[in-house]
Length: 322
Ligand SMILES: NC(=O)c1ccc[n+]([C@@H]2O[C@H](COP(=O)([O-])OP(=O)(O)OC[C@H]3O[C@@H](n4cnc5c(N)ncnc54)[C@H](OP(=O)(O)O)[C@@H]3O)[C@@H](O)[C@H]2O)c1
Picture 1 (cartoon, rainbow, N blue to C red):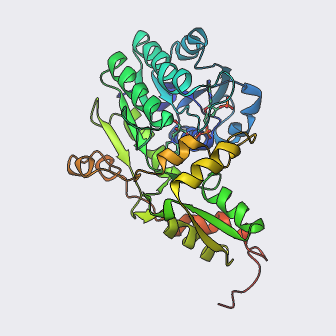
Picture 2 (picture 1 turned 180 degrees about the horizontal axis):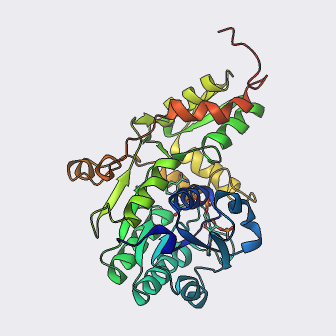
């Protein structure tokens, strides 16, 4: 796209979420006009300071209702789909949101001749025992069928000030004497900075990604879950037991935990933890990575302490004695 940002309208589905706020901020900085399509526009006011007056506009849309999706895409030059769910509730089912919702988005982008950036996840796999991963794979397939030139971005786990990974485990560590290591904590991750993912979205919108390619986005380091927990505990200066929990037992616990309003763990997530969540060798070879988009991955150590220090016993004010 050679269009001038100030004359380019980008519709962002899921703009109110964790990744959404960073994508909206990155687009606003470049001068784009942004239409944030969310289920509850009244809950998206926090995005307004990211842009100039009138630059960011929230509209109502639900990926499960194709009519609302189409209305949100009308007149847009580009569409970004960041909608995803980690557990099912009511009508929010994996297939409805991550497969058919993604398709609705792609069909509207095709109908309105808009460029499409679709955010999926590393681990998307039609054969996976995890329903989340299968629905992500089905979503990718339906998106490709509707818009062959779409850019699909598959991030590993993301970190950033509002992430639900480090913040969640740090909050647990503040209260609990131990942190669980599902399957011994051997699952490998490649944590990627949410700001780098947002920069990838901008790169794809601006035509710096290979048309029709699927990118795998990982940070500079691969770490096991156990290593991530050790890093977390060192950062928040707390000693906690790291308790290995076999997959079978974790699944049993998850069976009960899944009924919490925001589940700590679901049986489907236990299945996800059986497989490493890292950038594939094939993607690296073909440069379908952050580096391939001209982005240098940000170190976890450069960002995470800045927002985890609030979990230290005395926050940021004590001079460290160790
Ligand atoms: N966070 C990670 O570490 C990570 C890792 C890999 C991949 N991803 C993927 O990255 C994308 C963004 O993730 P995130 O962490 O930003 O998630 P998030 O914070 O939960 O945000 C998800 C967004 O989707 C919206 N949404 C949910 N159901 C919807 C529906 N039916 N119609 C319209 N909007 C709906 C939510 O808005 P409301 O619910 O308020 O309407 C919210 O704005 C997702 O596709 C996710 O699978 C995330």
